[in-house]
Image (cartoon, rainbow, N blue to C red; front, side):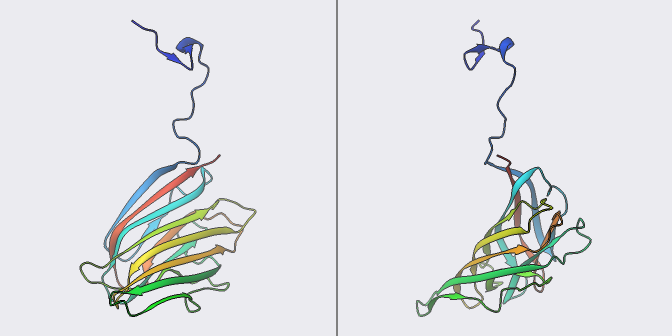
Length: 203
């Protein structure tokens, strides 16, 4: 029988194997399914293990019509979601009738040193049976006790007025305390959908 080799060496001579998870590759940490839920929280798994925590949102669908999807952060494991944030927001939109298009800054959706919830979809989402939104959200180095915590969100939402709205939200949590929990919810009413949390391994 042929001898199994690793890097042209017999197994008995190997002193270390490469990491099973290559650096820079997303690792699925948890999946949360909203089913007529008022909010979804991730209160564990956000720590110094990873430099980047990435959240992917699939078919987020509100119970109420004409509502916004939001988030906030916590430094106390989810007891309070009230971290001070400064943000910037813009979007592009196009309606189904092909009569309205724009690329615009959203002055009403940004925050300036506010502890309130931040809109991460700057479209008033529709609640029709075929209406939903998809989001990709990144939180950078949340466990740092030296720097502020940056985040970026890109999404596309089905607006209540039958628009496709491509949203860009970015900013920072203005705290040097470690962020260790995050909450997502509609501004009013419940929602359905799937949220996956990934970690990007330290380089």
